[in-house]
Length: 111
Image (cartoon, rainbow, N blue to C red; front, side, top):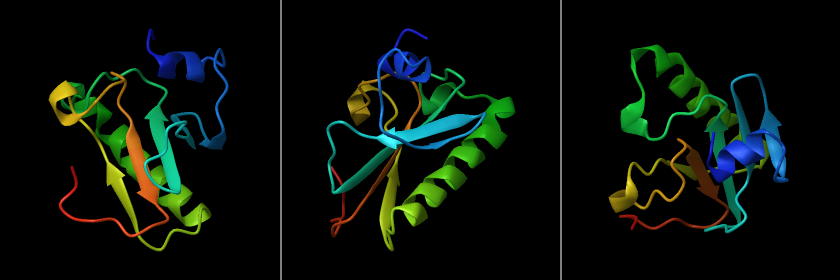
């Protein structure tokens, strides 16, 4: 895993972890876009959402469940879960990750 997320997973770069299990970790974004901005990343290296395969479906469901758990733990009534797929969508780290964003009113449409 050559991305910054790989370094975080290996403990080479510190992170403010709010959740961890055998499939993923969740930590506070160092450049938050809202008062609460947590990233949920799988331990398995999947570069983009469209790079997942059928065998990854349970993992993706687990990541969504963890997103809900951390939002609840943070006391968020309303929140947004965002996955950017590719540079044109704003993905800057090519290791699949979910953004859990909340703590303020979120406008629509995003971006």
